[in-house]
Length: 360
Image (tube, rainbow, N blue to C red):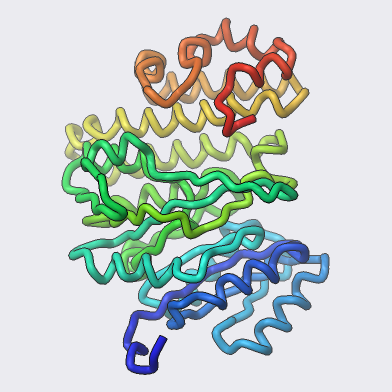
């Protein structure tokens, strides 16, 4: 970028880092290689114990764009991101995970969308998904339902958020991740948005869905520029633990947030509620699709029963709506507790035959 372009808005890239010795160098190299040079890179060391801090310190000493922040104890990615938000100086905010990497034009292309589209408060790109040790990558594009909604046929398109239905549809169909996006820092700070600390699954969904209530328009770039390590060791998909229940804590908070957001406008909440139901059912579907990876059938049954109780409490007609969802496979089984009991008891090898390839 030429010096004459230094007036471009500063982007604060927030990277929470915990014991990422194997991957952090490649991650930082990709961020520092961005063609959009108006960057500050906030690396938050979240109590690493594996030598990660030494690598971060070395990078910070070599490149003045890097600001190294530390948390003495491991508090999780939400707390690390919140620290980054409190220290960020940029007009725009981006997030990168320490085991991922990005292509050089990512921030240049997404910032161009924000600058070009009037009232755009969010820019989104497609991404690649890969497995550790596997050289192949899979492009993950935007939801076909989202493309159909706006009649998108070109590389980029924008989405106006001007009604509860359009807001709800976007919440239910946009990617739940925060790292394939650029956010407006003024919206984040003006609304006082932060990640829910102490939770490690679904906290980005809550942050994003609350953010969208303050945005007027979202802009989309149909180009994969982010490389997501979807199956890293220790990921939520590959481990079964009580962390799976975090998503329902976050979804419950999200439902209450929109009840408060619409206040006395009961009609507003009723209009967005079906899409919050879709979002909740989709999370249940994802975990149901991951059951074949795990052998603890008692935990599987406990999680499924909890999912049914949560969905029934907030959305009395969720089963009928789930069965009509075009992107949920085996919805007739997943929406019936008796059949899910049988599914859980089935051998994992048999389960794999009935789930979408991307979850195998």
